Image 1 (cartoon, one colour):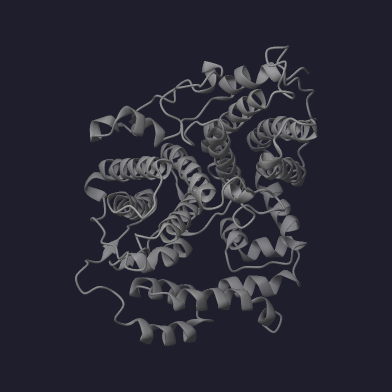
Image 2 (cartoon, chains in turn red, blue):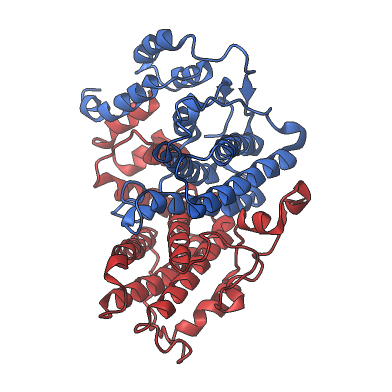
Length: 261
Length: 240
């Protein structure tokens, strides 16, 4: 069996030989295979070696990874600050935000490591102002403000990843990893929305007091040329059932207010 | 191959697990094609399951390429929609208004996904699949929400794993629009089961080391969903 043969070879061949033995696409398939437990140390090495060869010349993938990293820096610092702010998050809700914070920190570390494996330079963490110049002055003293911004960042994160997935077609490993982060952000978003007594899903472009840009376009009912309302669904169900992407410019317009430099 | 012996245990036990659950012949053929190393186990498993496929449900061939992947998604959306239609029409005892609202919303989303795929696939769409939910106690909150959790997590992992198999960016975007909604569902269902804990995005699905959600291949997903599907499902031609 191909897969067992490859595992047996890992200990004795260098990555160059390895790549000759197996197409890049096949290797990635094996790396993500459920039953395959490669030695932990071998995975980043192989991952980086293959990625490097294929994509070092292209700046598109590092650009997208740095875009994602910037958003993850923002989320990571936001939740760290929230958890550090005494009395902000009720004791019986801390577990929820500790879990989000843990994921955002892991995403930062993961994206940095992938960039470095690509021989690309991870962008530095920007300086953030979560009050957005005073607009959300009580973000770390008022739990409701904190929740509102949390929802804004999570829903924007979902839309941002979605907006760039297509550019990763052809890089199966990075695309899959991006999708695997994307759905985690959506799980977060649903939970935080429900803490605000909102539905876990987005109905139309309703923004529940947040800047309208965050939900602009979520009222779309046309999917792949088909009208979902035309299939007999209410506009509410039709828009809830499909999340919409944002372009980098749209994301920057939302997140830029929180980035000082 | 000596080196492989210990490492291959995990793979073998995964195959054994799959064989413990009812499977379809098409799947056995797929595994046989993929691996001679474990063929003996599969063949012995075959005997136990010879009568598993329904005599009435027709065979379903998902097809190849992007169409095959869209049919794969259509099959999973049919499964989810049928499940939630049952869950809403025969509510479990003691269901709360909030739970009814969430399950009804999710039912409508899954039906919209299902009907969208049917419309998008047109004449390439697979038939309406038949399901066997006899293992679910629709009167039990734990059974219904527990199954919902399995289906939603499975759906997320399926879309995450299938993205790279698509060729057209337009289809990838559509899959992306749907998978985040499935993840929203999974989060809500998990929170109903274990409120205000970390379970909405628990360590059982999100890897602690890198914060990544699950991604599964069609073979893995279909073997997990297999016990609920009456039809024989042939996915041999799907991209991999």
